[in-house]
Image (cartoon, rainbow, N blue to C red; front, side, top):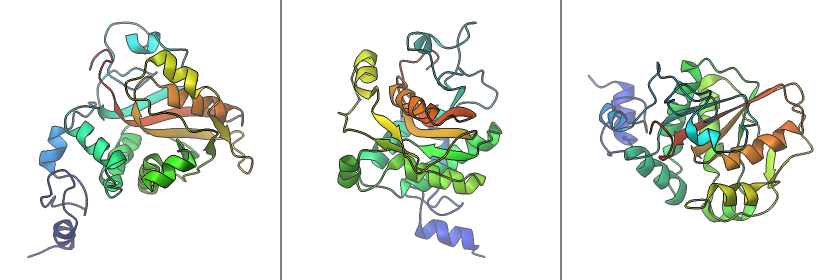
Length: 238
């Protein structure tokens, strides 16, 4: 006997392998999920980036090399390599917004697993020219899926002041210098006293999230936590 979920997963198959996920439509099948290097639930994680800790310091060695993190806690779902890297690159650069559902469900699982409470999820914004060229803000799509799953409203309260160059391959110094002051809080939003969960797709040096958090703090929120889909290699423990 066919169930509704099996029929839907045939119509909207696993975006990783194209097979029938046997689950909700357009979600990753069990085989593809096993290919992702998910951060274990019981792992000791760095509060600065969400990656797995090594050693006995307060945060990982890469976070120690960065400016002081302006957020209170960071979370990430998985390591950015292998299938995770392939899926995220397809999502961002190859016009596949339908991947937002499968990836957004992973973020929702992380939020529930860590019992993260927030008054709103705030996606990192794109400059309007990049939004026009790409057709969608991947962080906003992820936030909308995760927010709906977890019952947390999504508010696009930040705006990019100027277009930045792509950050891949740039040094941490260059990233921070270019992104400093690059975002502003929109005048129409009052976030005073709110607990905010700032969401982006990939955590590399944290420069983008740093700039976004400083912009949010001008609105006097109660707290800012950050969550990302993946943490890049080069981090201690990856």
